[in-house]
Length: 271
Image (tube, rainbow, N blue to C red; front, side, top):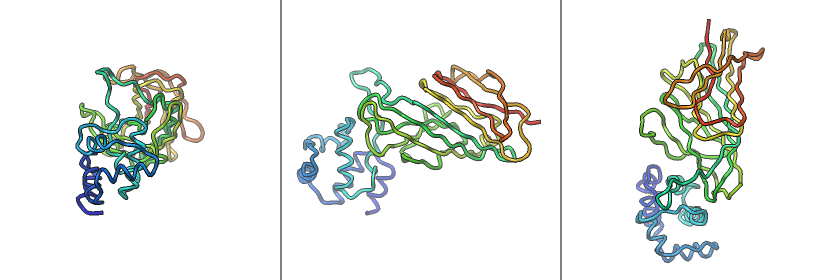
């Protein structure tokens, strides 16, 4: 793979990467359309032309499937082009409905003996409510970064526009059909002030059927108290909503069924 193509596949945008890949392989659009047709995928010349010029982008399930075939035909790594596509744009001037619902979101936070947060691991079960969903966007605050994923791969990251959070795509291996479920896992590391924060919060943008937060404290010295915290509005600081027990295994947990949108989590106090 030449350096120009490798660079544009890392940074995008999609149309530039597609143009560079087609040029590198020396294929005409007509030949590309024929190769797709041999694989049972029908895409018009005008669509291929619009995609590589940025006049439109593949969004529907059939178009996304065609992009996956293009990756193979153009000898690109899996998801090299899919990963450069942003979320589907709203149609008809109206906001698009959520393409995914969160059936469960379970996360465990490990706090070291020196009272720093070492790592957070999250596991989500997602269900598609519309065809073509191929990614989920997670938000994480300053001082945190996504380290590792399972059953998905990291896509693009960007600021949310307020400077308060970074949005990162988790990309699936294929677009989901309506009602189809997918499991995704990711790990988060902490740095700076976030490393020594005595709380772990999760901002839920939509209802979640089951939300579990578990904090595991390492070492002999455990917090003297733990609390469930909650705020219905991300702009307001969470307040204590009840005390939690630290068990004999050094863990405290919070579980909500039918969790409402808002900010919920666990905070702890040391002696």
